[in-house]
Image (cartoon, rainbow, N blue to C red; front, side):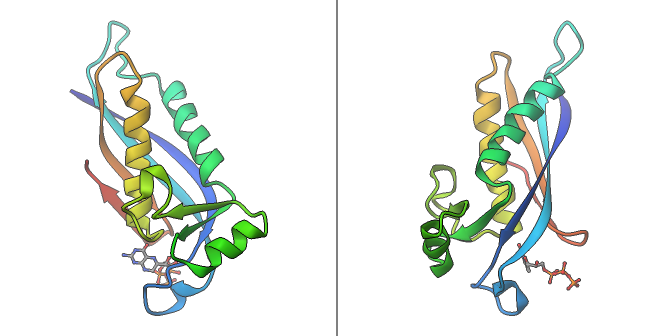
Length: 146
Ligand SMILES: Nc1nc2c(c(=O)[nH]1)N=C([C@H](O)[C@H](O)COP(=O)(O)OP(=O)(O)OP(=O)(O)O)CN2
């Protein structure tokens, strides 16, 4: 098995009203996600084409997260912002995040691992998501190893 990794990036706001301190305020981050996929090299000596995999992941991220607000479905601001016509990704509601309640960096890492699993599941060659690392700030990141 060989691991290959690609990076996706997006700008998004969130808030964590379930935690004490400053993070209950609406605030934004430049998020980065490293997605590592494991597979066997083909006769061209690649596990998966980087460009193809990155484009598929970045497309999902751009459509669903980029320049949006990531909020918990229970967050009172979610309905207000949706009513105002703003882009909101709701944890606890989206098909891939129903069991994730709040937009923590841990939950975003889990979400991206599920998105990546669906994408690699569509390839004809056997691939699996080995690791997802999401960085929220220079100091904070979360890692999921599905
Ligand atoms: N386990 C988690 N803890 C926290 C998360 C999280 O997603 N998972 N998120 C936050 C906030 O989003 C916050 O923006 C980041 O927290 P913090 O490190 O306190 O903020 P800074 O990076 O700006 O650090 P400074 O030391 O204040 O510069 C909080 N906790």
